[in-house]
Length: 180
Image 1 (cartoon, one colour):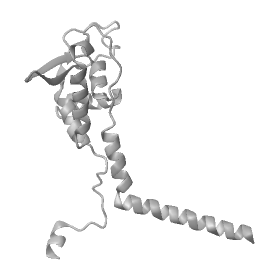
Image 2 (tube, one colour; image 1 turned 90 degrees about the horizontal axis):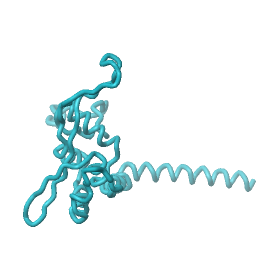
Image 3 (cartoon, rainbow, N blue to C red; image 1 turned 90 degrees about the vertical axis):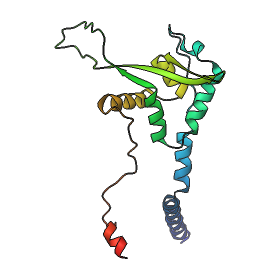
Image 4 (cartoon, rainbow, N blue to C red; image 1 turned 180 degrees about the horizontal axis):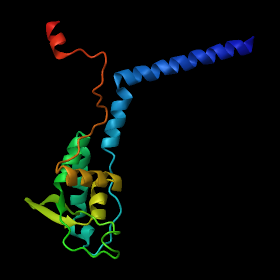
C-alpha cells in the first residue's frame, strides 16, 4: 500500500511541475531573463595575430567600450543592423582559380570589416580582419555568415523572425475588434 501512495504522490508532483513550467512560460518570466542573458553575454575573443596587427591598431579600452555598447543594445535586430553597418560588400577584383572555372567553386563577393570608436573627441574607423571583427564583437562564424548572406542578397540587415507566427486560428480580425 505504501508503494501506491508514493506513486500517486509522484504523479501529483509531476503534474504540479508541469503547471509551474506552463505558468512560467505563460507569464514569460524565465524566458525574458534568458533572452536578456543571451543578448548581453558576448565576450571578447582571442587575438587574430594577422599581418594587419588589428589588435594593436585598436586600443584595449576601445575594444572594451565597443563590446560594452554592443552588449547594451536592446534587441538582436539592433545588433544586426549595427554589425551590417560595419561590413562592406566588395566585388571580387581578381580571380585565380586553381581548377577550371567550370569546376571551381568561385566566390561571388568579398567583405571588408571595420570598427568605429572614439579617441580624443574624434571618431576613428579602422579596417580590421574577419577574425578580429568576430573577436572584438564576441560573435561566432555562423552569425557573421548570416549577416554576409543577407547583405549580399538584400543589402540590408536580416530581421529576427523568431517567435513570428502569422497563423493564429483564434485571432480576431481588426474589423471584428473595432465592432466590439
